[in-house]
Structures are given as structure tokens and as C-alpha cells.
Length: 506
Image (cartoon, rainbow, N blue to C red; front, side, top):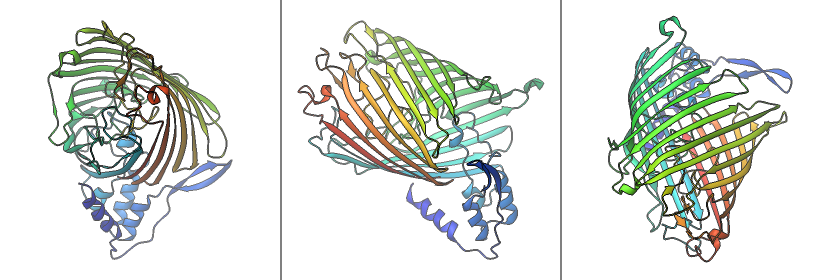
């Protein structure tokens, strides 16, 4: 499920039809460098399809009206980020499907390679590389055009060139031929004349909450979190909304169909308020009762309470974000108490390329008495980390557990469809005697210290069109004494580099 549809779509878009018509420019007036200029809003692929006679004038105008601010809602539109549902309907339009049928396909191919393997569980060392080509393909099929909608989304995630002993592969990189979403939704606008909207979702679904630190539909990772259960929301546009869910997390299997387990239950509530543009507020609670692991010492019963305060970035203005969470409960037979404050402050300059500079800090507690009566390692639940910490793939040495990390980031936009950034972070263990969780290492004496080093990451994203993206990145990790000393020398080298290239077609 990868190359066949690319060939099909390429042939579909390049077929020359009879009776090609002349394109009409559509656009809007926008202000640029103090002047009002015309900016075209025509989609080049739809324009090509019309010029080649694959769609009629009427279909072209109708499709154009459904883009921009008038996207067709999908059954999962209230569950996940807008960018995951607002995609052009090239395939649907080319196949002349009726309004109540939705169809889309997506493929992402990524090449990753790094030298100096750093996980204690990997056999490779001495400067050998761990290279992978990972492919994620999705197909979406929806029904409905009113208050009741249905959605099926299938996903196939694979990794290639990973046959050498010690290469990294698990259920975060591979999940073949599986059901990512299978749900129905019901929407009611203007509830009892109040102007409020409410939505109910039932089935298998993916979820995004807030900044996605604790619950996320994985974007960068090759496999995706999914949940079976019920989600409900009520709100007033973007001013405020209340969300609640009760689900069973889906257990990923590399080659078999994924399934849920009644031994693992996840629930929560989430409130969002944007009444004040300079003081947006999110308040949340998540509960987890995971009795699934065979080892009873790994059973988790957690309550996570959190608060997020933020202001959206704008030209010539400061922006900020604070998100903190406190976790309490039980891990096996010991008490669990952990916390995770995150803070950042930024400013967007009114200069060419609109540079935005961010100062960032993240802290996730660790266990200060290994083998004691209390566990302090923060559990990041089902969250993502690429947007503020670092990518998730065959490389990803840091997550939100026993970590303390100050850093900075610079983001520029040389063109409207190009984003470039540089990130620099310093990495420390929050508790020197606690485990370095991502690398599966621990010095219970604390004698090796807590400095893990620092890394510099470069990233360039280019959105060629609405259906084609390129993402190129490089990361260099300068490892600290804890990883280059005699304690860990056999499996950790002084430096680590990583490069990735991504192609997305949707």
C-alpha cells in the first residue's frame, strides 16, 4: 500500500482530455510590505484537472467553493487538528463521487539515518549507522453530508532496510494493514436555541487535546495512537468548549490487527476558553487504569491534572505558553507522584521572513530513590514530542520523563510555503540516580552526574502544494559526560548525528 496509488494518481492528473478550457484566476487582495497585492487562491491541481478535461467547469467551481474557509467537515473534525481534515478532495473530484461520499489517500515516505547508536538495548556500536526507510500510507472513506457522519481510516506503517542485528524497530515504527479509525458522529447545532453546538463520537478514533503533550494523533511518528470508546463535546465556536471521553487504548501489533483490552481504560475531561485573546486557558483531567502488563509491578493507576495558559503568536507581539501537569496514583505496589511543567516565551519580529524567537524550558520529574516506596517518573501518557523536544522515529533520545531541558528556537518563513528553524537544547536528568528513560540506562549511585549533553537541530519544510510536502532535517547530539564516561562507554559514543528526509503526498 504505497507505490500503486502514486502511479495511479500521476497518470490520472496527466491524462489529456478533450475540450480543455481556459482557467480563470481567483484570488484575494492581501497586504504585503505595506502594499495591497493580488494573491491567487486557485488550486493548481484542480486547475490542471479542469484544463485536461478531467472535471467540468461546474465541478471546478463547486470544488473551489469547498476549499479555503468552506471545507467539508469529516466525522473526526472535532477530534483532531484542522490540518489533518482540511485536505483537498482531488481523488473524490476526479472520480465524480457524490457530495455524501468522501475519499482520500495519503502516503508519507521518510528516510532516516544516524550514527553512533545510543540505546543500551542496541547491539550496533563503534560508529555504525542505523538507516531506515519508513513508509506510512492512509486511506480515508467517509459517508454522510449532514448531522450524521461515518468515517473509515486505514493505515499501513512499514520500515525497510532494518534487517541488521541491533537495528531499531518496534510498534512505534511498524503497524501493517490496520484500522486506524472506524467511527460515527452526530452533530447538533444551536442546542435548544442556545447557539451552542454539541458532537457525539462513537467507535475507534484518534484524538488531539490542546498542545498534544499528553494525548495526540501522532504526526511525526510512523504509527498512530488510537482509542475505542465514546467522545462528547459541547461549545460555542472557538470561544469555549468542553470535552469528555471514555475509551480503551488500542494496543498496536506490528503484523496482526490491533485490538483493545478491557484491562486498560482511559478517561478524562478538557475545557478550553479563548474569551481573552492574550490569556487563553485550558484545564484538564485524565484518568488511566492500566492493568494490562503481565508484570504487576508495571500496572498503572494514574490521575493527571493539568493547566495550560497561552497567547497565540502575532507580528510585533510577545507570546507565551505555560503548561503544567501533576500526576498521582500507583505504579504496581508503590505510590506514584510526578509533575511536568513546560514554559516558553517568544517574540515575532516585523522583519523579512517574520523571524520568531523562542526561549523554552521543560521539566519532567524522575525517581530520586530507585527501588524505594515512591515512583517519580512522569508518564507522558499518549502524547507527542516533536513540536517542542525532538522527533520520534528510529532516533529520539529524550521524552517527558526524568528530564530537565532549557533551550531556544528560531523560526523563519522565507516564503509563504517554506518554514525553516534551528533548535538548541541542553539536556539534564532531573534526578541523577533515576533512569535515563529513553536510553534505558541508569546509574543508581548518581556518580556519573546528570548532564546528558546538548543537541542542535535544523529543519526545513516546503509545502509545494496542498498535496505535496517536503521535510528535511538534521540533528547533532553532543553527548555529555554521563554517556561518554567509563560507565556507558561500550554503547555510547561522544557524538551522534541524525538526518531525515520526508516526502508527503496527500
